[in-house]
Image 1: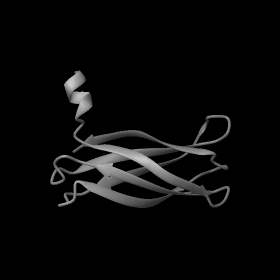
Image 2: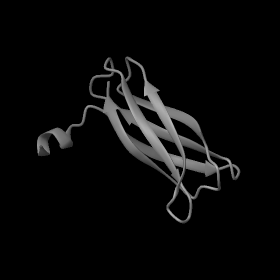
Image 3: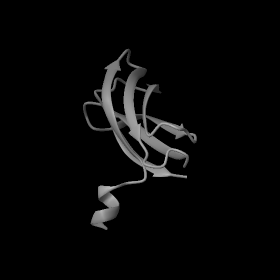
Length: 92
C-alpha cells in the first residue's frame, strides 16, 4: 500500500486559481503520469467559503508523450468559490 501511494499512476496539483466571477474560476494545474500513454481522469472541485461544493470539472487526460503536463481549465460555479481542490486522479 505504501509503495503504491508513493508512486501513483497519475497525480496532480493545483498551481494557481483565479476567481473571475461568481460563476467561474480559472485553474492551472499540473499532472504527472509515469506512463503518459495510459489515459486518466482528474476531478476538480470548487468550494465556497462555507466549504460547500459549488462547482466541479472532470479533466480527461488522453494518451500523451509527456509525463508532466500543464492544464488550464475553467470551472463553472453556481456561487462564488474561494478554493479549488483535486478530488481524485485515476487511470482509465
